[in-house]
Image (tube, rainbow, N blue to C red; front, side):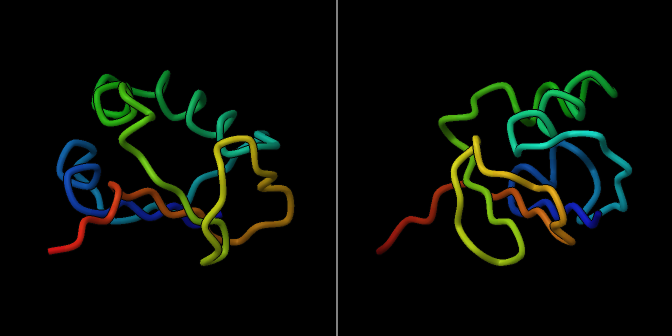
Length: 81
């Protein structure tokens, strides 16, 4: 599955995107798999209240299923101005 990172999440991980092989069934499980990979992922996902996620370009919660998904994107909350 393609995993995309935006804004400060991308900066902390050091990649804009990557192909990930996962056994996770939900976004939260995917995050946990990523966090144990390397410290940079743990830092990027330390405060999940500051992270938004989309699965196949649809906004979802962390408990959303990723089974059969082709893309998961992580980004900070949007702010207006």
